[in-house]
Amino acid sequence: MSKKQRRIIFLFVIIFTIMSLIIYNKNIKSQLENIKIQNQEITYQNNNLKYQNQKLEIKNNKLEKNNTILRNVVNLELKDEESIFYDIPLTRQQQLYIFETCKEFNVNYKVFLGMLQLESNFKTDLVSYNKNNNGILLSKDRGISQINNRYEHWYAQLAGLEEWDVFDFEDCVRMGVAGLAYYVDYWRDSVSDEKELYIRAMNMYNMGEFGFLSYERNTGMISRYYDQIVFNHKSKLEFMAIQDN
Image 1 (cartoon, one colour):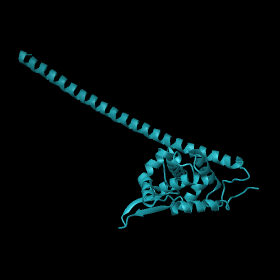
Image 2 (cartoon, helix red, strand yellow; image 1 turned 180 degrees about the vertical axis):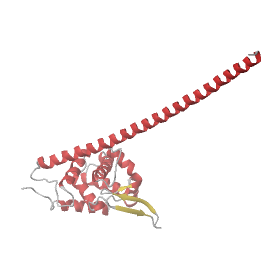
Image 3 (tube, helix red, strand yellow; image 1 turned 180 degrees about the horizontal axis):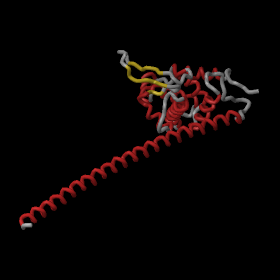
Image 4 (cartoon, helix red, strand yellow; image 1 turned 120 degrees about the vertical axis):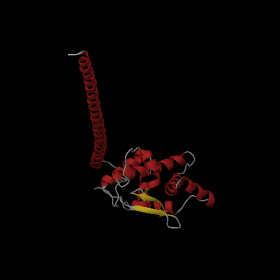
């Protein structure tokens, strides 16, 4: 074999080796990409499982809360002069949930029942459309507490809800009670009369803070049809109480 031939063979071996290394590196890179994709899929699956576990935990908490309410319905002992159950289109379990939520937020239970009757007549699926004088839709009030869709997140935050459904009875009641409690607390330090306190709080719930303050400033009054109707509903509850024998 001549010297020239040996050089050619040597160069061929080098070229072959380089090509093999290039192919090998490409295979390694491809495998790494596959591993990266698999890791991303695993991460996605883990996040999905985490989300599903959170949803199950929320459902379990609701079931546990419902079980507690059912136990309280059975074991509740009421004073002779008071009742929390009324002849209204809500089950005892639902009425007790409202009672306990109002107690949690330090809100008058009968006042809130009167508000629910005026707002939705206790309908959980009610949707009301707010339009301007030209018929243009401005916002919607939804659910048993008629939560305005523009302020849904705010009400949910007050209620301590990270996830919510305004058409869910418990979620919407809790949002409504929390909203009323916010406005009660708004006036509590400056208003000593309980009725005036709720007149102001209810009208703020109905009109918003700016709307009610403008109304009071322009008219010199605090009472409106809203609080008058609510107090009327509240007074009628006395004749609708269900007394267990």
